[in-house]
Amino acid sequence: MTTVFAPGRVNLIGEHTDYTGGLVLPMALELGITFSGRADPERLHVVSDGHDDLDVALPLPDRTSAIAAIEPSWGRYLVAVARRLGVSPGIDGKISSTLPAGGTGLSSSTALTCAALLLLGGTGPPLELAKLARQAEIDATGVQIGLMDQAACLASRRDHALLMDCEAVTVSHVAVPESIEVLVVHSGQSRRLADSAYNDRQAACAAVEERIGPLRRATMADVDRLDDPNLRKRARHVVTENDRVMAMVEALGADDPETAGAILTAGHASLADDYEVSTPIVDRMVAALAATDGVYGARMTGGGFGGSLVALCRPGTEPPVDTWWTRARPGAGARIIEA
Image (cartoon, rainbow, N blue to C red):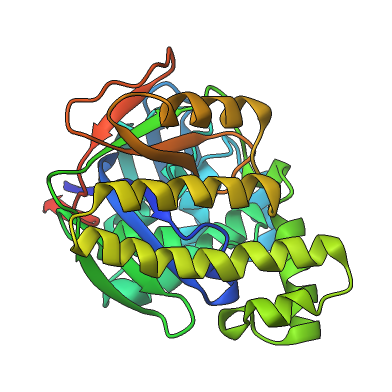
């Protein structure tokens, strides 16, 4: 029996920048998915607490399009990983999760994908595994996601956020000072990227880049040249968000929680106004958090359209919410915990 653990993640800053080669600053959580199993010569059979079992006979579907027919839907991630790895034999296993259920935006699907990748024998440097996990997720969902979530899941270091350059595909680790406590708060609004306008936002960025070149190297002067006001807003978010990532790295390095919080708040305004991926409920919760004594700043986190919020706070601060929330310190990346 082999057991692996893969963490969820929360993104501190750098939202909707990864798929244009931008900068991101996520951190792994200590919450995640544990996957235990042993080889099975005939099938992929996996039990998941609170969900229907996955039971798929080998050989696996030879077409990516066939993955969409797999039920239960969470099993598509496992089948996609197994197909990418060319797995034989399969696995008889069990999954448990400490991540909250219901579209929280904490990358439970990536944690599941990365756990399956390690359990089914995936090996190599973390960023190479992340690329494989990303492709498996695209196979499973049809959503053209970036590489941030998989890198955060596989390459993170305890007590550090992960600064990732998505153009160069490089990472470095940024210490999160103990004077700053991270709160993760569920909005109460579940969301699925496949049901959202995520791909539309990607298409808008692609349209921008056809006009002004790579957003990673664009300036506000470039953005201002765009005639289409909608594309101008999307581009403005990406360009300013890349700047906010580096400003956050500096604030964390200086142990400056007030500045770090202000960066979060500015990031949410950009996501709500320029990228239009927030919701009225999320906006109200962000405002309530930001007005709470001890909270330095807050914003939505993840792809948007619901999901979760992240706040930087004085240690011991409690959020004024009646939804699920947790205190978080940066955790380590996915790993085998029993072989």
